[in-house]
Length: 484
Image (cartoon, rainbow, N blue to C red; front, side, top):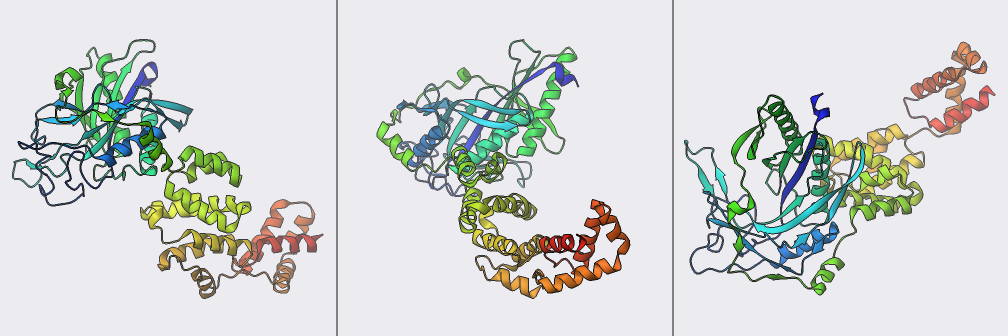
């Protein structure tokens, strides 16, 4: 492939909408889905005589992010006006941060198919969102909805440390999980709460960085991957055909799977940044940072390490279980009920049956119709031999459909109603074993000749005779005893 003779260089800028009830500089609501232009206050529109006031909750969320990624929280940061003109920017400028952001540095460690790497963060700064241009259902005209104008954002900027679409996606997913974990953003990509811009360039190995193009407003991991892969191919083909890459902003068209030019890419000086005269410097003292730190949840890497140490889990399981805070808490609740010695079994059920069901029904673990207490009770029924492992999966599916969340007694009821109780009675099992041995003298002879497959064949016939209800461990023990 031609890409192998090229190096891909990717940096991401992510806009995380902060989970405050009101906007960055006004008391207007940030609720999604209101009728157009019903949540745009005089401050959001910069009408004469109004003054912005910074949202304390937004600042605390920025501090929380900085602590989570090991960044520097600047004791003094500056709000600046970023000047540009667009129909959905009612002020003619956006309040953002330029020279001195609230969060500086830090990094996020990711695991890809080629191993671990740390993506360095340049900065994370506070700013307000613009409004939204609506092009549908307006008979050729464009409508402007200013409800989103002034919504608080944390723009998180990386160094150009990613070398493939895979790395960019893994980083974006890790960042998405982190901002949700520390509860600063709801992560709803469909509603625009988490949007990424990808800066993509290519170069020959050892050469300086190439000219970058920015792909704007990627609100789907799948689209991001396709957009980056297309853009890499486009730039390589363009250069190899004798052309040159022009610095520009591009959009991804999911219908064609291609990026297309939107406008020439601006540089910082084009925005004529200057400190906002209506906002004093943002002062963050050590005591404020300490208060935020005290309220921080245990971070995913620390929790994964604890799961490995406390529950003797493999690193893979611990990483899967800490994909979200809700998933991790579900595991810990169930594991503490069944006991640490059985925590691996809980992990197996969650990574297997539970995750598959959540994906199939496209819901989050918070909305799962099976509670951690029910899962723990089901695992206990499998382990005490009441139901087989296969029968347990049938109970899981029935419980999922029952709508009886939190009702632990529903498990025994389902086992009884569906006749899933495992046969563990020694007398009944011994009769089944004797019958199968009597009916299969040739296979018995093969077993006694040392053929392992023949033994498994007998086990299978006994399980079939019991309609899958026989206790497999007891069947194995009885067979071995009878066959010497």
